[in-house]
Each structure stands twice: as C-alpha cells, then as structure tokens.
Amino acid sequence: MIDGRTSAPLPINEPVLSYAPGSPERASLEATLRRMEKETAEAPLVIGGEERKGEGTFGQVSPHRHALRIAEVQSAGREQVEDAVKAALDAAAEWAATPLQERAAIFLKMADLISGPWRDRLNASTILGQSKSVQQAEIDAACEFADFLRFNVHFAERIQEEQPFSPEGMWNRMDYRPLEGFVLAISPFNFTAIGGNLPTAPAIMGNVVVWKPSEKQALSAHYTMELFRAAGLPDGVINLVHGDGALAADVCMAQESFAGLHFTGSSTVLKSLWRKAGENLDRYRTFPRIVGESGGKDFILAHPSAEVEPLVTAIVRGAFEYQGQKCSAASRAYIPRSLWPRLKEQLVAEVEQLTMGDVGDLSTFMGAVIDAGAFKRHRDAIEQAREDGLEVLVGGGTDDSEGWFVEPTVLVSDSPWHTTMETELFGPILSVYVYDDANWDETLKLVNSTSPYALTGAVWARDRSVLAQADEVLRQAAGNFYVNDRPTGSVVGQQPFGGARASGTNDKAGSLFNLVRWTSPRAIKETFAPPTDWRYPHMGG
Ligand code: NAD
Image (cartoon, rainbow, N blue to C red; front, side):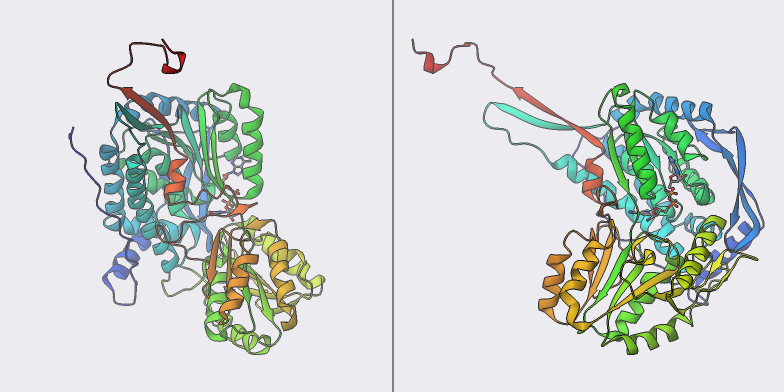
C-alpha cells in the first residue's frame, strides 16, 4: 500500500497510426490479419477468471467474406449467467476495498498494452469480425479504447477530489462507494471500444460487472477479455457471457443485487430493458442506475452560405465511413436548392470513387454491413424508396454472394417526412431533402421535429448569425452538435458523446458525467468536540 496522494499520468489521446503503404505498422498488422484469417478462434465464457463452456455454441463469420468462420463462441445459458452474477458478487468486497490508485494501475496498463503489443490483435479482429477498414478499426479498437481507459482513470480521480466544505469543529468527507451489487454491461456490435468501455467504466469506480457483448462482435470481445486478464484484472471483477442478450438480461435483472445497467445499442432494446427494470423494481435492494445510449437519425443541414467542397467531404465521410454503421452517421441531409446542382455533381463524383470490398486489403475504404439481417433491411429500404418514387442519385446496388455488400447510396426525397428521412436504417444510405432557400427558418424547425432521436447533427454555414440561430433552434436536437464539420468522429476527452430524446440517457461516454453514475457517494461528518448540553440559547436560563 502507498500512503500518499498520488495522481495518475495526465491522459493524452492515443495517436492514430497511418498504415500508409511501407509503414512498419502496416506490415505488422497485415501479418496478424493473414494469421487470424486462417484460424477459427475458440471464444469461451470467462466467469470468475475461469474459461467456461456455455449451453451451446454459435459461429461468427466475416461480414465481407461470410464463408470465413472466424470464431466459435460459447453461448451462455441461464446457469452460466447465474454463475457470472455469483462470481461478480464474490469479487465485490475485495475490489471495493482496493484503493483507486491500485485499480487505476490495472486500467492504465490495459491502455498501454493496447497502444503496444495488443494493438494488432484488437485491430485485426475488428477488421475481420466487424468489417471495418483499417482507419476505422484503428480509431476504434486502438485509439478510442485506450483513450476511454486513460481518461476514465483521470475522471475517477477528479471525482474523488470533489469534497465538501468543513467549517470549524468538523471534518466532512465524501466516500465514493461503488454501487451495492453488480452492474450489467450490454454492448453493441459496432465499436470494439464501446465493448471495452461498458464494463471497464463501472469497474474503474470499484464495481463488479457481468458483460454481455454483441454476438456480432464476439471475436474482438474475446480478445478484449483476454486483454483484461493480461493486464491483471482480478478474477470475477468483469465476467464475460456471450450469447442471447434477452436471456442474460432476464437472469441479471431479476437479481436483488442488480444495481446498474450500462447499455449501448438500439432504442427498442433500451426501452425493453428499462421496462424490465420497472417490472422487477420491488425485488431490488437499491434503485438501479440505468445508463443507456441508443440510436440516432443524424443530420447535416446546409445553409445557402455553406462552402460546398468541404461539405461534400463531410457528407461522404459522415454518411459512409464504416458503411454508415456508426450511431453518429449522417443519414439525412438538408440542402438548399441554390447549392444543390453543384453539390449533387461533386457528391456523385466522390461517392462513385469509394472503394468497397474485403477490408483485409488495407487500401479499401468500405467493407460489408454486419450481417444478413442488416443486408436485407437495407436492400428492402432501397427497394421501397424506389417504389415510393425517391430518386436513387448514386449507389443502390446490393450483393450478398461473398459478403453483405450494400453500395453507398444517396436517395433524394421530395418529402421531408419519408421514412428514410425519419427512421434509423444503420447502413450506407443517406436521404437528401432539397429545400427552397427562402424556407431556411422552416427547415430548421423541420430538422428539429422530424425524427424521435437527438444524437448528432451538423450545421454548415459561413454566415455567423445563421449559425447562432441554428445553435438556438436545434439546442435539443443533438447531444453532439457540429459546426462546419461532419457529425461523426467524436474523440474521448474532446467531444463527450451521447444524445437525449430517443437516443438515450445522454450520460456522455468517456466523461466524468458517465463515471459519476457508477458511484453511490457516502457523506461522512465527523465532529471533533461534540456538544455536551442539549439545550439551545433561545430557551433562556
Ligand atoms: P442491438 O440493440 O441490436 O444490440 C445491442 C446489444 O443488446 C447486443 O449485445 C445484443 O445482443 C443485446 N440485445 C439484443 N436484444 C436484446 C434484448 N431483448 N434484451 C437484452 N439485450 C439484447 O444494437 P446493435 O445492432 O448491436 O447496435 C446498433 C445500435 O446501437 C444502433 O441503434 C446504434 O445507433 C446504437 N449505438 C448507439 C451508440 C451511442 O453512443 N448512442 C453507440 C453505438 C451504437
């Protein structure tokens, strides 16, 4: 034990490596990819530090080459989920008694392992399993993941520093206790870093966790769990159960000791979990914390004063990087009629140049969508849009013969209320509505009221008064609001992430606000010379 007020190294964002042809990082990653492509990883459950079998198994394939089976994954049944809860509770007292500086060292070590020897493994499994291009894998599995760990340690320290005033004769202190019980973390397929963050953020604050990653992200989740263990995380602090989310949630959320849910995924699932917590409320020892970040229908709104060239780049990157499968991806755009002819021409020219294919070839810009279900949803949506009379400006093609490929697609809708302008499709499909320049004020209101979500949005204009107006009218329309930028690419510590309305609880992943949810502070007042007379002066005598 160290008796001293220490502070962890100040966090710095992990530099993004370029993977340019001829770079050492490219050669090293390619070697790992070629090796990993040849193997089918065995992905066990990890409960109380033990590798366990489930009640069955399921396979994970590469979305851009669905004949390639990359993982054989153990699927947890009721018994294994119950064991995971028990293992978490068994580890709780010791972990809660471990001082933050000792806990922090483990997570900082994890971050350094990610920067160094684990970088290739995490990136390669994200490329192969989630079909990310190398750039998209690097900013996720390497950089964002390491940033979450380093910044969250820093935020945990800042929370501990927050202490009450102590007037004369007493000492007031805050004890930042973990929640009483365990936290259930359920993560989505689209970010390896979110898979890493959902269990570690509560664990940094001293909580124990049952983690259920997405079935579609099982391979990178498997390596993430191995990383946790390699960094020396004590057994039972984070327990990994792969498989059916509804089953894991049913078992975990029926426990008296269920103390919190850290969820990222679709709004539908978040709502179902919230309901489940409500139904089970009488069972719980404590009111559970629910942190849920969910879907988006993210916008780009251009004013007639916007610069066209950078706007085109923002649309291309914002809508089509990672096949539009970022919760922040631009999926609706509002363009003034005066800019449309020029913008349209450039947009088509750029989109036609996007390369799509096997992301194991590191020169590729886009891979496949995550699975057959997503492929069908996107194909059907494009087909329906055609039937409804929308113009398919570019793209529109689909091909699932080798992988689940959906071309980057731009639809133009005469109606701002068409379903593709309102609903989250979560694929490489952008819907454009062209408005009359004179209707700018109405268009602002339209953007604010079209979709139930409020995650990200970007406004483009050169005119400052217009930017100020948009900032005001769209204040509740996006939790992450961008000015003359694309609505994606938030960085931990720089743009804390999350949205309200149907997009979630907006607890801002990778910020102090998120970590605050994982502590149940105790206020301690100690009086040095307690009074010896119960009478007050106003009583006289
Ligand atoms: P999803 O909701 O289908 O799945 C998320 C997780 O929930 C998975 O682990 C899944 O197995 C589990 N799950 C599914 N059904 C469940 C149920 N009935 N009960 C309990 N768990 C269940 O989401 P996805 O397809 O993995 O991810 C895409 C969604 O996530 C999109 O809506 C996207 O916008 C959202 N997302 C939001 C953010 C954000 O920060 N706001 C970040 C990433 C993704």
